Image (cartoon, rainbow, N blue to C red; front, side, top):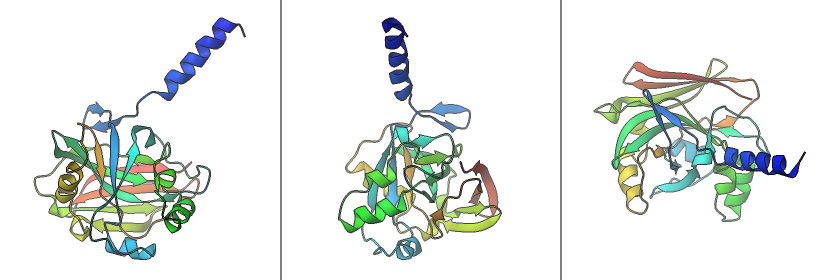
Length: 222
């Protein structure tokens, strides 16, 4: 390949790496600058992983490059799923709600936690978050609840009222130390029932408002 063509393909490759990831809010395409995540927001999930139930919100951040267009089962090691109620931010308010899966390198996370080190290597890698579309936020958040089925078996179920820190509290606390841009996403933590992602498994996630299904999405694990 000539030097000119080599430079051309190299530039094209670099541009590809810089493409920002998007999500859908109704019919609009949104580009989040970041994803704010809450850890241990359900007491039973904290207990199942042998963690203390926190008295303050545990925050960590995923970059835009974490947003995936498919559910992967492996990234240097086996990955675990964590279904989370997720919220879209606009003008410093919650404006939309959707479903997200936080993909986690559990073995690495455990190693990092035991060493007292940050979790980013286990949580913020490329492709570590996948989202449904986002819907308008209901006026009352108290009826929101989620379910996750894997190959038709219920594995996770959580209600907003079970959260240690409710979405509006999370938003307010987050904005006390970091600026939020329009389109940023807040993932509000996962209920108990997390586990390893098996290649080929079919994930079906549901968002309810009271007893009514308002959002349903399926992913196949690759």
